[in-house]
View 1 (cartoon, helix red, strand yellow):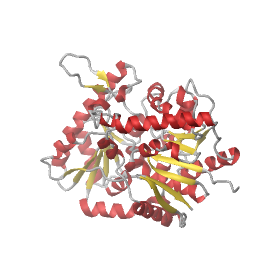
View 2 (cartoon, one colour):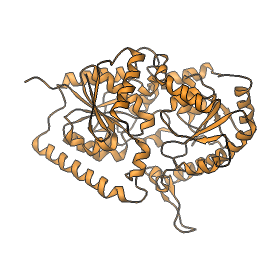
View 3 (tube, one colour):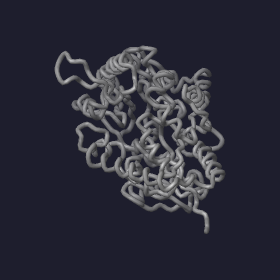
View 4 (cartoon, rainbow, N blue to C red):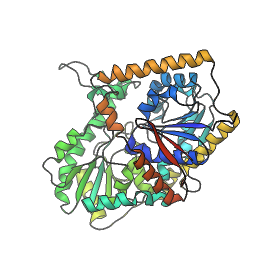
Length: 464
């Protein structure tokens, strides 16, 4: 019997942030003979028992993933993980509490790291079991490289035609302005004087840290809302685009923009074309500050309130830091009116080198597939579970899907709420996916013969 090609399952949680880079990984794997399934993480996890045994490329290893990882292992899937949130964090202890657990680490076959810094962070975890770990970089950074910048050319042109000259404000307040209040660090109490509960973002964190972080982020959130009308008045020749974090409630920003004709609250597509089309970025502790540094785009970090224990060092350190509104206006005026451009230092470049691999040479996507291909070749495919293991996995997967789809989806403010799921993954047609592959093909002169077919709602198979 002819052996089946190896299978790779590539889930996408936040479509605007993850789809394009994970499509690049999917294409690189399909080009080498993998059967690749790409789509909504929620939909893939609901159908996990229907996929051929293969490698599941997880976006993280949080404690809440342990149950799903155990199900996948019983079904015969191997798990590889590249933590999407592994680049920016407050401290090692906070990162371990929020993003890693001993249970998930023990179920992962292969780990990938953004760079040397994140690799060392994982190896230093007290329960690190010696899992093979590879410093590959993240394909999100691939899309910032010169050879792939034309991928967004049409989108950049449309944005510039639509808005003209504009300043991009990326917000990062999902811990205090979450899509649903129960997703915040702290849940507002039902009655005055009551102690607030820890919300979803606070689970696993010490209460004093969660309370301090909530107060810190909340103060900056207030300053950002005061900043926007001040910049609108100070720069009458420029539009202002406020791009909320994918997990944020957009209503507070819409309220700020309500009477400001040149302020637009927009969250469409990948951030890269918006960065490229803008004149400057304003943020506080946002990964976009790192992306702007690589793209040579002026990035201003507005820090009206500071606290070493709560501020996010890497994106702030790679930006021009402004500590009050007057300094922000002055620095932005230099960028917009005087064409000051970027002011990168050698220390900043060394900082990037420690944190981000694969900024030149082989793409991060190809480095990841190199490892997956070797893993598949050595193991001859994922190990076949016993009949009893598979049955337990199938029953657990079916029960989990039914509970999440028919019970938890109806619970107010639950992350399985259909509105929240649509906010994270809007959907894409097979034709749109084919068009994106064609754009990748033009940039890299690869992937010309790849096929796309839908296998379920929001789930697609990509193959040669």
